[in-house]
Each structure stands twice: as structure tokens, then as C-alpha cells.
Length: 345
Image (tube, rainbow, N blue to C red; front, side, top):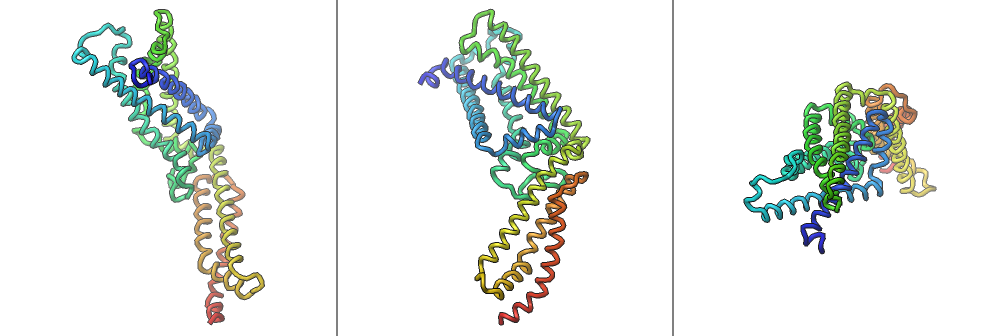
């Protein structure tokens, strides 16, 4: 197949994947810009792009593009070096304005890849991947000692950018990305045939402006995110606390439903007409098993109050009252448990 067997085909694949990646980077910087002006909407976008089938398909497609782009970049580099031999050390006629980036595209790509690994570790692995793996509170990464919902991107901005080294790594990555994209932008069009002198000069100008605007936005975002994280904006903002509260309200509802399902399961395990057996099963459940549910209820209440101290959450208030009532039932069941045991004997 000419896409793999010929140099032109491999360059075409590089150009095609490069175009797709440039479009993704542009989309990504626009999505991040939402976090600058409307953090609540940013969380809505993060939730929409969570572990849904369409988001997963897009993620796999994007991963495939990166892998293909990297493989073909290495392939072409090895091929070019073998073809040129010692000639690569000679002075060539590349335009001076692109000479450095053109000669160091592989190195720049490696720096960008290293930055991408850090970025995915800080965000994708703790958000979309976490949603796929587990929703248990104990498995979630913590922000200020409280488990963070994978859908709340602002909490992960807080977690990442409160560390001093994050903006340093990001800005280094953005500088490398600027050089890589600036050369790659016009080069990919050159590969697919837009190689006359008029269009090449125009594409170089467009590429420089496009890349500069995108990278300038990324740098501005990194600066703003760092400032806000160190001011604890993402944990103290009232509108964001309301949004976090919706997550804990859903957790309260789910925990209550789990408890009710467990009670129903106990009721189904004994004959309906055997009142004595039903009473003994209830006593056994409340004296031995119900405390674990109360502990979970109290944990949810504690986490929500810590993460959303300024917000009144109806579901959490109800869960707190229910946990108190359940504690009384547990104590009463424990008092009846010895009597129930004697009756069985």
C-alpha cells in the first residue's frame, strides 16, 4: 500500500494526522477558554465529555491519531537519516526562519509527548479513565481531603495548578508545541500539494498567526488557572460549590436507594406470612449490617459539608436526619438481638 510503502505516502499520513491534531488542539484551547469565563459551564462540558460512548469513541480515535503520527514521524526520521547518511551534518538550503524547527521536529515532538503524558496523568486519567474504572468514593482522587467527582473539571484544575511545577512544565510544553505546530502547519499543506511559492508564503503567515494565538491562549489559561488555584477559587466559589453539591445530592440519593434495596432483599429472604422470622431477620440486619450504611451516610454528609460549606443541600440534610434515625433503630435492634437469639434456642 502506497501509504506505507512509499516516502510520499508516509508523508501524506503525517500531514493528514497533523491536520486532525491541529484541529483538536484548537478545540481544546477553546474548551479551556470556557473555564476562564464560565467555570460552571466548563464542568458541564467535562460531564458531557465523560465516560459516554461518543466521548470514548472520540478519545480512541484521537489516541489512534497520536500513535500513528508518532510512529510515522519516527519512521520518516529513520528513513531520512539512512538516506542522507553523513550529509545531514552539511549545511542545507532551508529558509533560515524555519531552519531550527525543521531540523528539530523530532526533538520538539518528544518534548510535546512528554508534556502530553503529564497532562493526561493530571486530567484524563483522573476524569474519564476514573469514570470507567470505578465510581466508589474511596477510589476517587482527593482535592482538599475530599473525593472529587470525575465530572468536575474545576476540581482537577485546583489539584493540578496549585502545584508550583505544573505551570512551568506546561509553559515549556507550550513553547515546544508552538515550534512544532508552526513548522508543521505549513509543512502538512506543502505535503498534500499546496507547494507553490504564493501559497507557501501565505500558509506560513496563517500558520504563524494561528499557532501564536492558540499557544498564547494556552499560556494565558495556565497563568489564570495557577493564580486561581493558589487563591482556592475552585473550592470557595459559591456557584461551583452549588454544582459540587449536585454531585453529593446524587450520592445521597444513591446511598439511600442502596440501603432500601438491602432491606427489601432481607424481607424477600423470609416467608411473607412468617412474622416471627421476618422480625428476627430485621433485627439481625439492623444489629449486624446496617451500621455500614450509616457510616457511608455520615461519610457522604461529612464530605459534602467540607466541599460545599456555604451551600444547603436538601438531599444531604435528609440523609443526615435519616442516618440519625437509623442509628436509633440500630441501637434498639442490638438490645433486642440477645432476646431474639434466646427465642431461637
